[in-house]
Length: 147
Image (cartoon, rainbow, N blue to C red; front, side):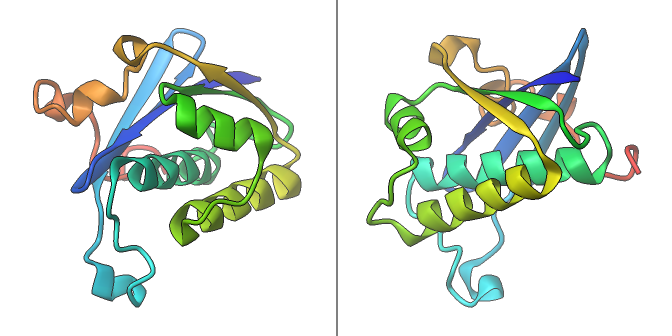
């Protein structure tokens, strides 16, 4: 099966949307306080938040059985910098980003997923609207309806 994964984030929250055919599932979460992760997830900028959103979006999609082994995921990236990091798979000077890339690669390998990265215009990112406050109520803040 094929999916489109949209994601975005800011210093406070991150969101993701998984589009499968005509169905779209929207999720939003708050970043936990840094002390809850031993300081490892002290989100300092939007790019770190986006990498968290991408990782959690794939992980969550697998956990609620929307994404299954051997599925193809079109990663819809609206940041040229992030797109380049993902395409080239190179180390950065940012531990959070490097860790998220590592965990994404683990999920892809363990579940035999095929990721295809696509650079899109920011106006086409359907996950962004959940962070803006305009459509916050259209995204779920928990997984209770999916498991």
